[in-house]
Image 1: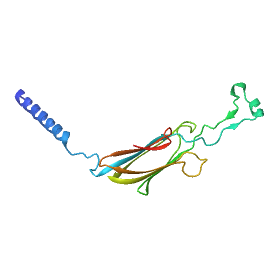
Image 2: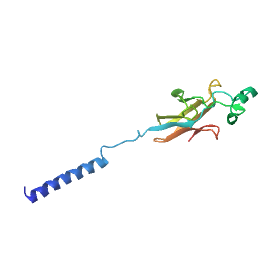
Image 3: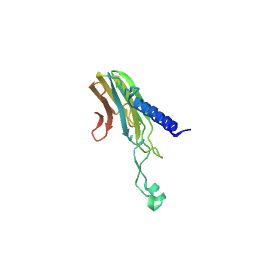
Image 4: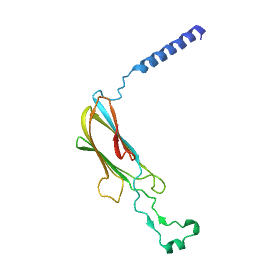
Length: 167
């Protein structure tokens, strides 16, 4: 095979490769989100309350323990599961129960859901129960939001701010 023919074949392969690269750099068109839609993200990490109260040990119980383990109060490590709900315009869209993480069930639980909704006005109701010792939901937040097209709204939970935060 002659060198000229080999170089021509190699140039043709390069041209085809570059043409394919140029085409796929812009096509097919990718739409991340519909132009008239918005996104609501429920994203939170929270440690539930302990499953029971601490209790004081009796003097007899303390005497039975080795000296290095004599602590007056015995507190459970296990945490309550989280029960989280998110309603959009009166329709329950998220109803999640998450168990605590950790070897002894003493860590935080994480909830993440992504909802696509039409842009415009929406009524949000976020609820959470973080204690098995309390009936119903211990935290609730209602909000009316106006979502712009392609806007991303995050519903989070911040203990320091006292509950649900909508950003």
